[in-house]
Length: 258
Image (cartoon, rainbow, N blue to C red; front, side, top):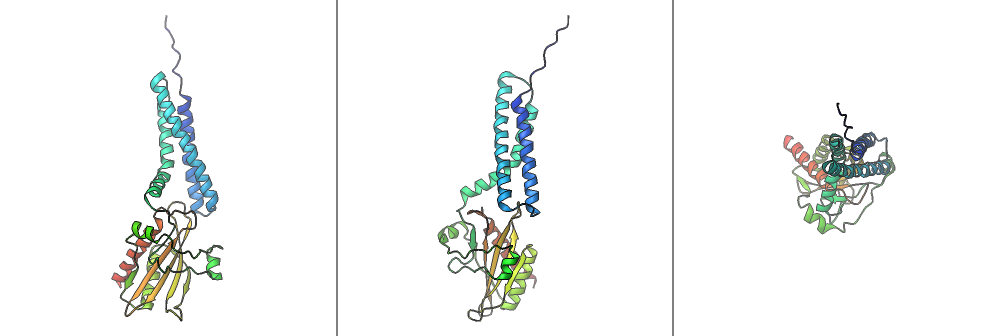
C-alpha cells in the first residue's frame, strides 16, 4: 500500500518577506521616479521613501526568521525568503550608503570655497520666481574648521583671464554640468565682483539645490568662488563638496580648451 506524505509546509515568514520586499522596492522605485519628474514635493518624497525603508527592514527581519525556521524545523520557502532579502537589499542600498557618509562626514549642508567671506545668493524677484519661491538663507559659516578638515580640496579657482572671459567660461562649465541659470548679476560698482546663480539637482531624487558663483577681478586674473547649499536637511552627505569639485574640474577643462 502506497503511503502519501503530506507536503512540507511553506514558511509564512518567507512568503511575507518576499511580499514586503517587493512592495518596498516597488514603492521606492516609484517614489524616485515621481520625485525626479517633480510630481512629488520633497517632504512627500522623503516620507514615502522612509516608509519604503521601514517595510524593507521588516522584510529583512522576516528573511532571518524564515531562515532560522527552515533550518530548525524544515519546510519550504527558502527561495521566497531569498527574493525578499534581495528586494529589501536593493531598497536599502542607497540609504545605507547615506548612513555611512553621515557617520564619516560632518553635519554640513552649505559648502563654500571661501568660508571667511562666502558668496551671497541673490534674493531678487527674478531669482525667487525661478527658484519657485525659495530663497536660500545667507548663513554665517560657524563650521569653518569642520569644512576645512573634511574638505581640504574645496578651494577657489584662479583663471588667467579677465572678468569677461572668466564669466563666459563659468557659463560654459555650468551648462556642461547641467546647471540651470537663475540670474546673472553684473559687476558691482563698489567691489567689481560679478555673481551668477544656478540650480542643480540631486543625483537620485532630483531635488533642486542652489549654487552661487562670485567672480572677483585680480591683476590680470579672475578668482572664481563657488558656494553650494542643500535645501533639505542639515546634512548633504558630501554632495556639495563633490558638486564644487566637479565644477572646478570642468572649469579648468574649459579654460584649457580656450
